[in-house]
Image 1: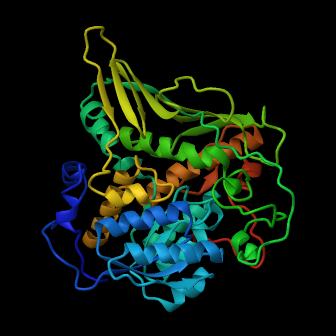
Image 2: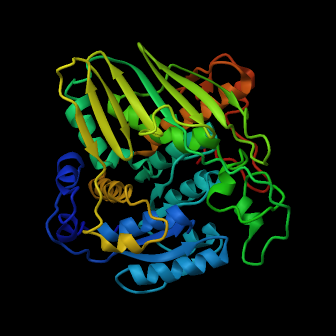
Length: 456
């Protein structure tokens, strides 16, 4: 491992500095340069893969030595961008097969920005190759993939940070510290989480020839091979259960993970879910357009609801969570929070998201960047680097990412079977339900082999 430190001079310019220094485990923040920059590779050079990489480049001395993508056009475009963003100006080596990338390069960090159905195989191979890993959420498409990822991280003693950066979002860190932890809500016995964003791609594009620049066989990998009907990037692949777990796996995990962090919750005692395609029946999409779920804890229910049609129950908070306490209510999202005390003469508290446009002007020219999420991702990367340096667990450690991911996947199993689910994380089984247990691992398409937590 190269010795390194975070660039303090650049970092303290940011509005999030004091929060990071007081909340995250960042030691030795003196101005210091690495003996050698951290050797980094990115697998999956699409929208969010590049966004994660550029946030890492902003907070640490790194050399992006390799990029991997099955879309040659996307890969070439990413290589040009990376050469302009990294200090050395070098163009990374380019690969279409992540296995070859891992075999030919000695890496400190691997970022994984591929579609969900690839996360497990790529993350496990990356830690086995000797790298620490930053993997996007949800960590897996089935529960036993997640168990194998946790087992691999522990066996090979590598830091694996999950891209659930809400736990590194400045205004949400403040919310937890100043409202939840200080007891302003009192006893919290009900939580509501929701997503009412119309993000379900539901078209009917025709089957067509695979373009020369895309290796569709490799893109599909262990998933079922669907007839090719257009570039799958961005929203299109997410509309199919073959590659992910719908809005539940995409959006609920963020809110549920944040709630678990704020309230210090582990595995739910029971999970139930209902839903289906109730309204948007005209397209190819096979993910639910309407779904509710209940994650049960002692004297606390965490309730999820999504609809990809109609309007939100609160237009100010279309993707959010709400904590209901005996002393007040907290509405929170990636954009802001509002605390409303129960007592009429109590003080309301409002806080908006922190932006860092002036401190990081390069953000303003980055295509498709989520400016509200950039400060959070930078803090998430800093926490990741700190965990690597200090040999500690990061704030979004793979085990926590697994609990949040698996809980959402178990909700989908409940919806599919029509029965509540009780998962035993020690035995790695659903209690008393043979049919549901058969859904904990998806069949893999040959020649790919499903990872086994007992043998990673």
